[in-house]
Amino acid sequence: MEKTSLLKTTLGNYYISVTPESHQSHIILRVEVPRTTQEIVIQYSYSPTEENAEERLDQLFSRYQKDNNMAATDRAHIQSVRNLITISVSSSQGYEGSCHRFESTGRVVINNSQSSPGIQTREVSPGFWDISFNFHALVTAKTEIHCTIDAIHKEERSTTQPIEIAAIKKERLKRERYLNAQTRYKKVELHTHTHHSDARHTTEELINDAIKQKIDWLAITDHNTISAFDKISPENYPLQFIKGLEMTTLHGHFLTLGYQDKPPMDWTLIDRVNINEKLAEMKEQGLLIGIAHPFDVGSPYCTGCRWQYALESLEWIDFIEVWNSEDPHESLSNTDAIAKWTQLLNAGIEIPATCGRDWHHSNTTKLPAFLYSAVKEPSSGDDILEAVKLGRSYISLSPQIDLTINGQWTIGDRIHFNEFNTLMMKVHLTDTEDVHAVKIESNLGDLYEGNYKVIHQLEKSEVKDLIWLRVSVFDQHLNRILITNPVYFTD
Image (cartoon, rainbow, N blue to C red; front, side, top):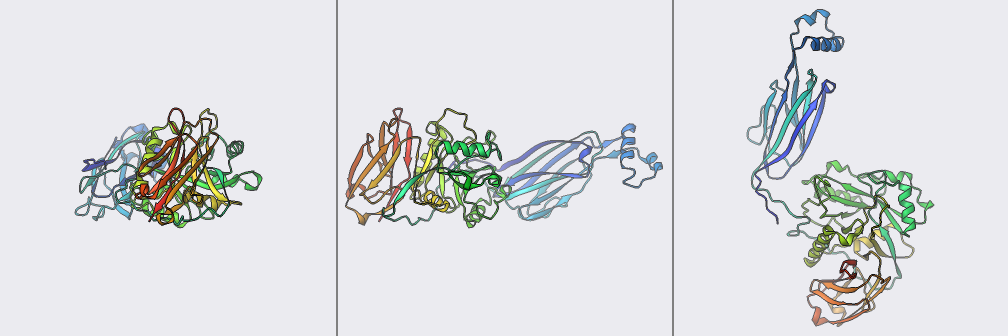
């Protein structure tokens, strides 16, 4: 775990310019107060404090005389007028109070022993706080405000790398089955955008490009909106749709798939304090949830792209996007994501991997990867989402794979040790033009490395501590160009 030595965190440092057009209005500064915060300190100043130029006073009097029912003779008694800016505070627990004072420089302290007058004295609750500047009077041509908001902590704060696994748990899904039912791999794209968020293409252009690439199931996952689906008549297209959304929060992006009647959650209500309960609420909605590009470059280049949430459990996370964007095999952040996924698998946490083109436009010469999920025919959206959730899928830039073990198990299955004495693994690849090497990877290390024609046998004694295995395929530059989800093993 990466440690920091923070006894104070600056939650915000703001410079604001306002004009008389903001008279009798509010500006709200929203900050996220972390756990272990003992005290909040708000320091502010504004200038100038008053207006005394005769011409300007005449203008102000003329503007507000009628609204305030003032006689014309009142103007003679006005030598100057002043700005009046106050501060109000609301926490994640509700309204905390207001500091209605005339000082142009102030310090507001909020704690559980002696808060500044006007603010409740009680425990500082973590979560979003709104610091509101209340413009009772703005009379100068321009008013400059400076505000710093600091959190004072009870103890040193610790930060974690994405998906810290020290206390993470995840219930195992029922995945035991035999290959009785006939299945077929469907080509799936789980991460796309349209002009309803920040893409260059329209919804129609995205769909037409997906049809050209012979995609069977297309998830549209615009940032924090599902409005693109208002314009889609699914029966008019030779592909199927998954109604989705990329929850684009300030500390992490995650894909939410399978919306039905209920609207999406308001993403602005999600913070690092309540992330676990918000994910649980989304699961109650019946959604599939997956962490997107957890190791991408973060703020300020791409705010929220890098996963910064500390999860109490992975029960609400159904998959991790280990390949993001085009040419994903050349991305260091994707390499980190596969390494983290492998670390989770080694810890006994069964969570599937997916890929997402993060499709914003098609004007590119780079290669996209696709997810191939095994479903029965005919298949529904629920079938596809279940296949993703169970990891009955593989990720590929080009080659296609058929993996069988003892003729009855395949990707996403669980095998009990009492069900075999010998493991006979057969890997059949097609579209092998770029294939240079194949590995059978596991928690025990690489079980096999060779060419793409794989028939490999292992005795039970050789794999007594086996938890999982998967197949990876590499090109001549030793870049991974295909990776399967695991086959799992248990007593």
